[in-house]
Length: 362
Image (cartoon, rainbow, N blue to C red):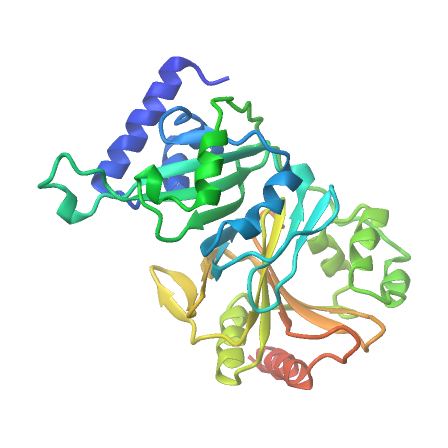
């Protein structure tokens, strides 16, 4: 439990950072303080932050009522932001489905939803300073954290201001439901390093897959992490690529106007963007895709491995490109857009074949 003195120190540091730049992101401030983003926001409860005492499925069922939003999901090295409106919720009490290919398309794993909160971040404009009595504009967001204080998913209202009467009704209802309950986060622990396990039947079972979703049970049966499975199957169903091949892939897919599916996942949410890609741009060392209704930020310089992965299915198989960080966690997954019952796009396979040949020659 955070002490009063610790909470005060966190708030003072947060305020100081925001005075310098009101748009400084919370995760950056938290990293400077050596705490989780959830701990930072929880310190602000009662002052611009409210706990939402709703079950995960109940909260997700309201997403489609929130109007036009910007939603955001972050992995360790990638951030996917999209503008739009949520579709109605499907799925079950344990896993939610927000299905809108080309729009807001998400898979929700409720077991990792630990704390849901509503946040008001004042966003003073330069014109606010002369009029001290004016209430500055604000950015309202709904944010979900796991038990370790890591962000699962974020939803930002579009066009809302600090005056409660101008909040959309659905957001105002959430504000009225807000409580002052404080979460108790736990420290996360990384799995210990270990020698590459043996899995003598992995290749046979991999080849027998008829649906890509069977891959998760395959990993579970063999108690393997995804990167371990890729390593074991190298030369059969997987192929390692140099890290710089990731930028080449995105650039060539953009040039060929290939419809691409970008998967960015936190522990409790997978966010998918489907469509053609803009030209990748490097800003501040990060590789960025700036689309009309979406943005992908990728710290590809910190990616440690990239793989082409083939998975059999009833339609002739699907192929993905997967990027991992130094801890072996999946950062970004890329597929060609596809429809159930149809073969994978030949242009995508040709692109990957060309890319792997180029890297082999290099």
